[in-house]
Image 1 (cartoon, rainbow, N blue to C red):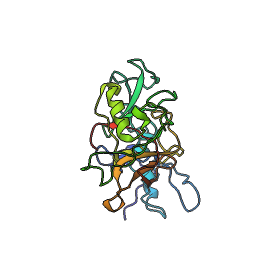
Image 2 (cartoon, rainbow, N blue to C red):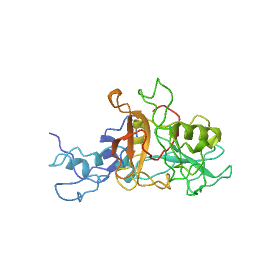
Image 3 (cartoon, rainbow, N blue to C red):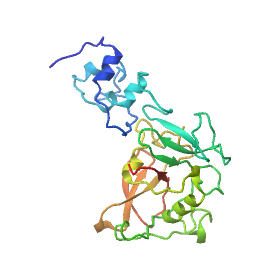
Length: 266
């Protein structure tokens, strides 16, 4: 086995790192561990690649965008924690500086674009009367028999403070309402798939497990995906938890958070 010198330059370390597939974010995990503690050698340091031949090799922390960002060798279109790369998008659809703040004016921040996946995400607000208020919850509902897995789900009750017609707080009604507002100048918002939701997972933090600088007002709860589990479990769909980014099955009549997406599909 060839062992590299711990004095190799950072550029060589990063060149030796197998990159993630194009368009795939990293995990946010850039701390390595031994049996009991965090590794004393930083994953972004020149010595880290040499330590991969030790007793705890091939850890995620040493590869991809995250350690490259920690070594200041990962170019970004926008900004974001670790290897994530986000850009704030205004209500009128224009790209904003990282310092932009949320608001309702045309040039205020309202959405976040992931520059790696190309997906654009809804950003929640902290105002109780807003359509996109963070604490509104929804049942899973899809009336299209070709895509609902054999079960349409629940029409919902008033868990979104009468912001939807008939106080039927469900995912389909919420999608329609957001599209009617042309959020960030687009009317093709949809419920994200399980795979798409999981691209937001930041496993270097928890409660919530995503970059809160670009996704503020996120509760430590769970978000509906559009992915139903299987025909034998037609009454359930996948939920991505906001605590540690885990996934679990939710009954379609249960109430969970929703974060809409556009672009792709990814």
